[in-house]
Image (cartoon, rainbow, N blue to C red; front, side, top):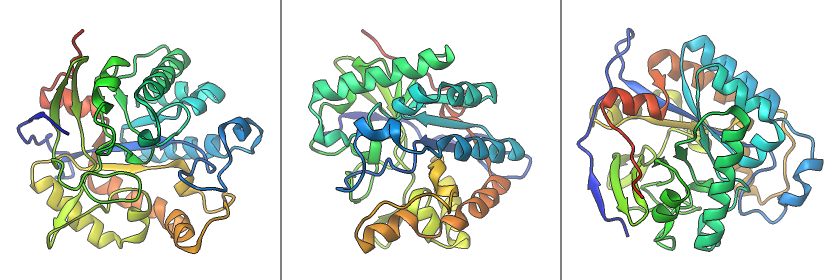
Length: 302
C-alpha cells in the first residue's frame, strides 16, 4: 500500500530543560464525537446538543500557555463552523491550525469521493474561520487502513501538505501494523505529502502506544516518560495527542458496552496531571515548527 521514500531520522534540538522537542497535538472535538458507537448522536443532531468543547479547549490552551508550549490543533470542521472563535483563539496564541475532517467519519467507511469532499470542506471552513492556511490533516480514529489505498492521493488533491493519520500498530479503528515508525515522504499522482505516524514503541515484538487518548490515561506516568525517552532516542519525534474532553471528568457519558466505556472514560481525572508533567519534561512544538526546524518543506505539485 505504501510506496514511500523514507526520511532520514531527525532530532529537533534541545530545550533548556535538556529534552528534545516533541509535537503536541489536540484533536478538537466534543464529548459526543465518539466513533463507531450505535448510541452516538448523528451529525443532524449535533447542533442541538449541549457543547463542552469551548470550555475544555480554552482550558487546554491555558495549560499550553503556562508551559510555553505550542501545538497543532486538528479542528473538526463542524466545530470550526459552530465555534469559529475557538479557531481564532488558537491562532492568536500561536498554535497551528489543522483539519480533523468535517463530519468525523471513519475513512474506511467512505468512498474516495466522499472522503475528498469532506476533507476539502473541513479545510475551507477552518481557513475561513481564521484567515490562515491549513496544511495538516488527521483522520478520525486514525482510520487509514489497507482498505483505503486512495487515501494519500485524495488528501493531496484536497490541498493538504502533510498528514498524521497512520497508526503503525494494531488497533480497533484502523492501524497498519507493519508501517514505518518514523516520518516519511510519500508521492502520489496528485502531489507529495509528508506522513507523521503516531508514536509507538516496540516491546517484545509488539508495538505499543502510550502517548494519547486512553493509552495516556491508562498507563502510569513513569512508564510513559520512560517510553517517551526511548522514542526520542530512536531519532523519531514524539507525537502526543489528546482531546479536549479528556480533561473533563464531568462530561456526559454515552451509553456503551462496559469494555468500550472503560476505554473512553478511564482515569479522566489523571489527564491534566500527566499532561503537566510531560509539558514540564519536554519542549513541545507544532508539526510545522518541527518541520521548519528540521529543514523539511512539505510540498504538493499539480
